[in-house]
Structure formats: C-alpha cells, structure tokens
Amino acid sequence: MVSYKSLGLVNTKEMFKKAHQNGFAIPAYNFNNMEQLQAIVMGCAESDSPFILQVSSGARKYANQTLLRFLAQGASEMLKELNPHLKFALHLDHGDTLELCKSCIDSGFSSVMIDGSHHSFAKNIELTKKVVEYAHDHDVTVEGELGVLAGIEDEVSSDKSTYTHPEEVEEFVKKTNVDSLAISIGTSHGAMKFKPNMCTKNADGILVPPPLRFDILEQVEKIIPGFPIVLHGASSVLPYYVEAINKYGGKLQDAVGIPEEQLRHAAKSAVCKINIDSDGRLVFTASIRKVFHDKPDEFDPRKYLGPARDELKKMIIEKNKNVLGSAGQGKNIFA
Ligand code: G3H
Ligand code: 13P
Ligand code: ZN
Image 1 (tube, rainbow, N blue to C red):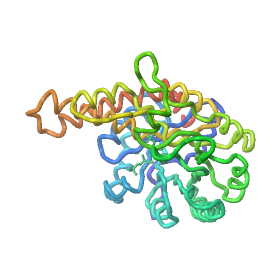
Image 2 (cartoon, rainbow, N blue to C red; image 1 turned 120 degrees about the horizontal axis):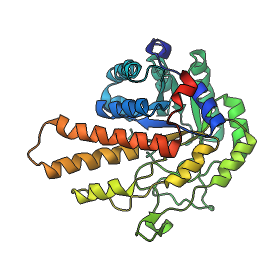
Image 3 (tube, rainbow, N blue to C red; image 1 turned 90 degrees about the horizontal axis):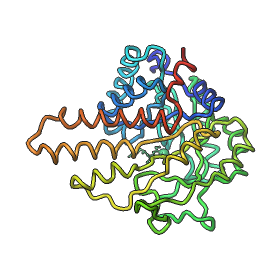
C-alpha cells in the first residue's frame, strides 16, 4: 500500500475549490509514455499551472502499472526542482470497476474516476458509492459521471438525448458523496467529435460544430451550486495540427473538436476540470510525421520524440494560459 501523500501528490479538493472561486479550470492531461509526461510536467511547471496527470486503464496496461507509478513519483521529484511550490494530482481516468479504483488508490493515485454512466441510475449510484467509501478512507477524491458522452456514431440531438439529466444530479451527488461530477453537454472523445453534416463551414472552410449545451450546465450549477463539474472530450482538435498530419502523409478526415471560445466559457463556470488527451496525440503525431518526412534517414528516437515533446510542451503552456486560465495559479493554491 503506497499513499499518494508519501509521493508528494495532492488530491483535487483544494485545486477545485480555488478553480471555482477564481473562474478557471484545472487541466487534466492524459499520458502514456515518458515524453508526454515530461511535456506535461515541464509545461505546467513553466506556466505555474496546477494540473492533473491522468491515466486510463489502457495507459496503465501500456506502460506497466508498476513503472507508471514510479514515473509519476519521478515526475513529482522533477517538479520539485522545476517549480518547488507546485503539486499535482494523479488521477485514474474512466475507471470502470471497484477493483481497478482500489488498485490505483493502493498504488499511490490521489484521485479516481468511477465511470458508471453506462449503467442504470441505481447501479451507477451503488457502484460510485462503494468507490467513494473506499477512496475517502484514504483521503482520495472521486469523480463520478452522469450522462453518456456521445460517440461519433450517436446522433447528438434533443430527441435522442444522452445528455446529463439535471434532475438527477442532486440525488446522485447526495447519495454517492462524490467530490466532482462529469456531465455530458455535447462533447465526445477522440478527434472526430461531430459528423460533418452536424457542422457549418466558416469563411476559411473550417468545420464549425454545433454549440455545447451550456443551458444544461447552467441548470446543473443552479441545482448543486459550487459543486465541481468536469468536462470530458474537451480537445479542440486544432486545424493546424490536423493539416500538418495530413500534409506529412497522414489521413485524418473530418476531424472536428470543441472551439476554444467554448472551453474558455466553460472554464469560467462551475467546470473545474477539463480533460485533454486527443490534442496531445495530434501534436505528437504531427511533429513525428514532420521529422520522418523532412529527415527520412533519421532513426534515433530522441530526434523525433524530442521535437514532439517540445511541441506538446508548447501546446500545454498555450492551453493553460489562453484556454483553461490556470497559468500562474500554482502560487495561489500551493505557495
Ligand atoms: O477518455 C479516453 C482517454 O482519451 C483515454 O484513452 O483509453 O485510449 O487511453 P485510452
Ligand atoms: P479528448 O479525446 O477530447 O481529448 O478527451 C479526453 C478525455 O475526456 C479523457 O477522459
Ligand atoms: Zn473522458
């Protein structure tokens, strides 16, 4: 049993409180390997942004769960050198069983998500409650979810709603005692968030998706005022990187994300955590493809993973400063 406190990590309580009070959101960046981790730690240290290091069960399998724990521990030590007052939370993304959540808590995670959104309301409450009981015994915070994020195959329309039902949130939060709640207001995972026929084209020929359902968010905020809300599927899928991927031999069609304007709006509201994975993947891929295109004789991994890491770090600083509003907030929370 390893406590996250012995690794120098924090749970999400204090950072969410400050994010809510001051109208910004904490970035939750997913990682699978060392270079992504370096980019996140260096980018957040440089911009003095509180952050959440996010690990999916797939990432845990990919990296090896023991190695991953030590990578996070190493990141905590490295952060002390780069920005001594800053701390981060290590969070399980989309946990689906009590056993997985327990295993993460026992190996040093400071926060877990239990995603019971595909279950019935009653089963979701039952499962989430069990995770919360175990987590709170270890001072670990828990994120629950209500409403299913649309997949590209799902029709996001009012007649077939997978959006969060605001009338369910109060009972869910009270009965489970969760610390934060992920809601569904029109985002989805991946780089193809909307079908082209759901979008309009702007003057530059770029697909513009339908707006998020901020009316649902506002209803939720009224019902559970001050409660931290989480936005999944929040990558912007920046056209610049999609174009670079396609220019250097990739084939990504109809990639559309959430416009940054809408994320800025969300960050100022009760949304305290914004999840970003796909944007990091796109930046990495664009950068590696460019090196392979420009220098076909290159075969030292440091020569293509290094530039990818640097570009990802740049993207992270940019997001913290201009989208999440979290840059510069580290000293207000931890110093
Ligand atoms: O929500 C999903 C995250 O982007 C993690 O994706 O399961 O492929 O690691 P993954
Ligand atoms: P994106 O696919 O939009 O980056 O969303 C990531 C996410 O929600 C991780 O839980
Ligand atoms: Zn997610």
